[in-house]
Image (cartoon, rainbow, N blue to C red):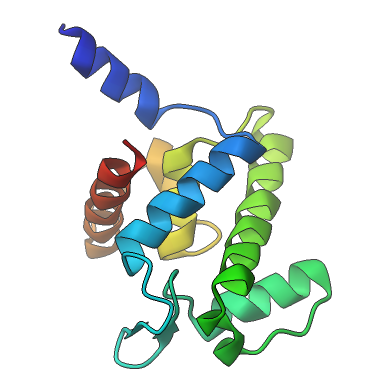
Length: 145
């Protein structure tokens, strides 16, 4: 196996620390909007640089006790705060339940597919959601480099 392929495999399974979450968030920004804070996607349901849906804002508010509104996601700093908060929360959940650190891919799946999507990394399901998650991760992975 070539070194490049070995490094790619290691990157897919890399565990995530706080610093790596920041790196992942920046890859998500590039994937979602290429840094366009005014971006609106998913037929008007996703806002800002991270294309955040209202359900994600509600999850963040539940986790942190804050009271952000969906419209606040047009603010770049607030969007990054929401992403870091949600990803840190689920990273700790994975660490607690699995007794190991989360991988970047697991957190990428969560960002795109919801809180329980991380399970699909180790136990893929042959369905449309899995195909979409894998395609999304391939885009994020390119932006991690």
